[in-house]
Length: 419
Ligand code: SF4
Image (cartoon, rainbow, N blue to C red; front, side, top):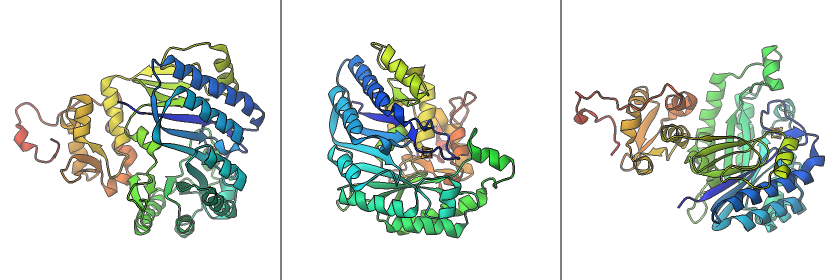
């Protein structure tokens, strides 16, 4: 039985950072009450259009800045979800928060209503980086937020950091990461800065006002981070994500994000949110007002397409296989299991992607791993060239392909450990 995840997009920010291309808006806080009403209505319409209460094991408030929502609004959303879905034992409820937008009271309240994982956008510990990124907090805010979260009872905290910021040196990055590690959090997400279309950062770089990212320096920063975190007891499970193990041996990996990387189903609620349900990839209208209008105008919907959907694309089997490779290979340890792939699709990895696997193995970008050699994953070198690897598995020109022509025998296939 599939267990579902819910993503809830909260598109409000105090200020729009100059590198950000997320669907988020500054100065629209007056729309929060109507937005929350609409979000609840969307959840209600979609959940009631299913023929049964669907099981849910993770909920993720992402943004934007979900910590800008009043506690009563978060509570109302969670109650609406509990009314429409079958919440599973051990439910993970994550919320993204910006340091500087939380207080001891708000964090205590969040914990009381069931939120059990927080992700703080730290980004850097250096004031020059924070100023350039136009972040609205300082390092003291981060330290305080972590302390207050602990006092409120949170035992699962993440910090997001960015490396490759213009003018950032390796040493400055090392100090930021050291400080993050010293805070004793359970999870770290490290992202390399990319200059996205339509952002002030890209325009500034094009005008020569800031340097374009230095790929070699970013690679050094990433390599250093891998070693530093492994030495500090973190386990890398995804290209950009590291987790600790708890005292009883369970992992603090983000179960919500694992749902994406397993190419498993999730609902996307809110403006611009994406979902993947029953083979449909859905995308909601982007604007806050458009989202509110859609949710108030539409009386009922046809599962799994919600009232605010702007797009619903039915994914065929081959595309599903390609996407499973693209997202699964992000899991740096687990990778894509040949057995799980075969169970899901009734086809072998080798028959579907043998050509790609062979050529990527030849250049040491992927490898077979695990006790029985069942898991295809990136090599350490491949982690730095992940986007190149993923592109080999997706796109219209990629066709299913066994690497051998019919005159060759399977016996020559000793390069691959697939069953
Ligand atoms: S706080 Fe986060 S979501 Fe909001 S504008 Fe800045 S980077 Fe984007």
